[in-house]
Amino acid sequence: MENKKIILSGIQPSGAMTLGTYIGALRNWASLADEYDCYYMIVDMHAIVARQVPATLRKTPFEQLAQYIACGLDPEKNTLFIQSHVLAHAQLSWVLNCYTMFGELSRMTQFKDKSSRNEENINAGLFTYPVLQAADILLYNADLVPVGADQKQHVELTRDIAVRFNGIYGDVFKLPEPYIPKVGARIMDLQTPINKMSKSDIADGGCVLILDKPEDIMRSFKRAVTDSETSVRFDTENKPGISNLMQIYSVCTGKEFSTIESEFDGKGYGDFKKQVGEAVVELFRPIREESEKLLADKAYLESVFKAGAEKASYSANKTLRKVYKKIGFIEKPR
Image (cartoon, rainbow, N blue to C red):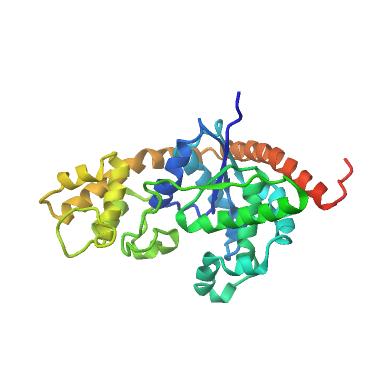
């Protein structure tokens, strides 16, 4: 039997996962388990490039794991684990730092963006974040990395690092490819539809969370920014707000854009926004209810983390031993 290709991705443990995260990531991840060998991390090591409240950082991975499972990520079919539980991530990251050029990291657009918005904490971790991301990917010989279009540059850097290392030491790392869904990969902010929906913008009402109450979801959609016209038509350049709502509605209902345009022909935006809100409420209702049940069983969630870390560590440590041998480190006596 042919081995399955490996997919790996991760999300920072904020606990507050968005509609955009669900449509762009979780929904797609859940459909991949039968075809691929899937590793999904809760990337707590990446999270600390920004200051975290320790008590919150200990709590949110459980909330996130509950949502992973409630969104369809079966722990029996997917390897679900916390990044810091697998020590090889930090160990390989240091090695790869020594094979990554300063200029390459200086060109990372996310570093430029995040440092401009966080001038009081431009730390070295923020700068070398993509190297840890490369270690995450290369440890598991990942074939594909599900990412948004804004993260594609980091996968390209991972490939560059791997090519450089392989050029010196031989065929060590597999070269990963980005996996970017064609539909629904980039859900925009409801208040500023030219920006990607982000959990950092919860306060402005443009972000909808998976665990939001139905009344909060409806309020967000009723306030969604549209345009001065009245036609429901897909046109991302001239009608970004309506196009974003159409994309959300399409995912929730399975309807094509042409069908949606016909359905709301002659109707006002108010009716359309109400229908989109109701569709999202019904989409998230079973996920929210299942998440609440899972959070009531912390022992089960801990068992999932433990099993996931054990499987991930087995694979990651094989890669790390190979790297250590290639660069000349002495193997630790057993």
